[in-house]
Length: 284
Ligand code: CAA
Ligand code: NAD
Figure (tube, rainbow, N blue to C red):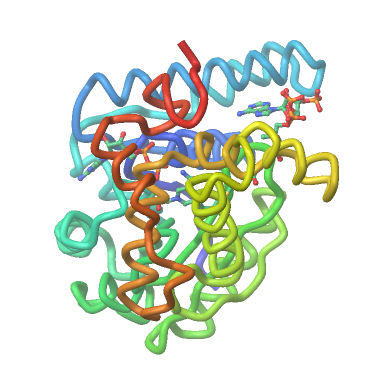
């Protein structure tokens, strides 16, 4: 089994910065790549803030937090990823954009390197087919907030070899996560259940059944969920949820997976949730 010594992460958004932080916390050097300086700095700022929270709660010493931060090399150049044994892509949920990046990475990386996507809903085999190494391509689906959530879904396509899956299970455990095996169908295991639930909550709210506050309160106090559906939608990002819904509906043609009109309109209005300062709730 090849050892994963250096990890590359593409995208320093909500997921990418959490994945980079988690890998660096496990002692691995990380190269964090973004398209531009502004989102890169924002991502590094989120990592610093999260590490500060762990220090404040005495879960990390200041010197360990500083060492973790120093293990992450931020860059806007794809070529800096060339020596990575594993690259995890966590860029925008859009197939053509991901395919273009996979082609670039495939040309750049050593033949043994594994290429993973953190996609929530896209076909992993479509990304694998854009490379000359489909047997070394898989899904590695983390959950938000990555430094806290314990699960990682390892997604096997019809071309991924068992060796690759075994290496990714070992890697997931090294990060302190519990890996589960999922097949290459949109939404894998968790989002296949979670996304229809979130979309149905929007439909109920649109229908006038109850206020969003009461729906959230109902699911938190009645079912013990840590967040109600509208709090969670704002947390995940309404733009990302909208892209996921479109991809899942396109594949399954199940009306439960269709994006409700209100979700589309909120995305068109730029109300993406916490990351834009406004979604179902206000974060100004
Ligand atoms: N970095 C460091 N610490 C963090 C953190 C971060 N990014 N986010 C939360 N924490 C810590 C807090 O400091 C706190 O620590 P203590 O327990 O030591 O006090 C702990 O996590 C809990 O946080 P809070 O007390 O602030 O708030 P909370 O109790 O509501 O927990 C939460 C926050 C962990 C996010 C919790 O609300 C939760 O589990 N929410 C649901 C998250 C969820 O469902 N995620 C999956 C989304 S779906 C997905 O990711 C897949 C997809 O493809 C869309
Ligand atoms: P985000 O919008 O917060 O971040 C995406 C980042 O990718 C942006 O900073 C953008 O500048 C960057 N980017 C775009 N094109 C790039 C390129 N070619 N190279 C490098 N960086 C590029 O999105 P996110 O919520 O972090 O989602 C990222 C991926 O993770 C998506 O595939 C999404 O479906 C998946 N995902 C999201 C969640 C969630 O809760 N938000 C959970 C699990 C998986």
